[in-house]
Image 1 (tube, rainbow, N blue to C red):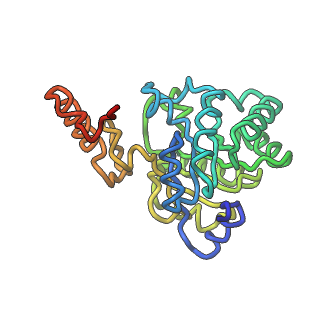
Image 2 (image 1 turned 60 degrees about the vertical axis):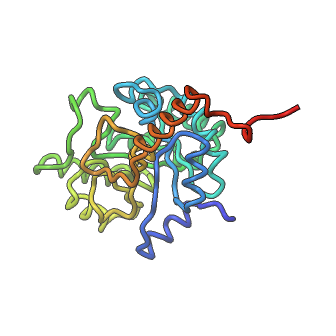
Length: 267
Ligand code: KIV
């Protein structure tokens, strides 16, 4: 079984075959994604909200990202694994970015790092790529800038924002990002960008014209109940199914129906 590489991903783009990506944080779900043939697994810092129950992603640490990525890597034998660099682990200086991204790759076993930002991090991306670290960019809505946006919103509407989105894309593409995630941007913008891009575009809330798509695993299986953005498609009512199983277990224990004889050891 051959591991997916950047070369495989570019071949898919060239052949107009869609690239699949899911964001997840643990061994079992990664194993499931891997066995279904998902091309890329992103260990997203969305784990701060989905796994840790926090309000946003800002407090996630590099140690936490490495811990989760190691678990995912164990489950992902074939998929290309990307580690999301947390807030303030790469923005301070080029030196700090190289040190932290280098540590992330060495310790977690990931194939690439993901950084949020446009023109303002182009120099950092350039250096990372030149020391040998593959970089995935992330523009459009950037959750690490939630404080600046003041909430979740669509990015790239209107003349000024669409010009900025395109120039950010070009800046990080030219700096060497081989793949760029476009989050909650108008589909027309994503289409336009993808048609003239050399790097691979992956959309989330960016319409169907990107080279690939990403969703959070827990959204897809319906385990996240509190919020459901327009771009999420739930393929399963996971929360209902899990609740039903837990309720039946509770009932069986309370009624003395679990464990049965078959589920018990004799002498
Ligand atoms: O953190 C994450 O899971 C992400 C994806 C949703 C793109 O950044």
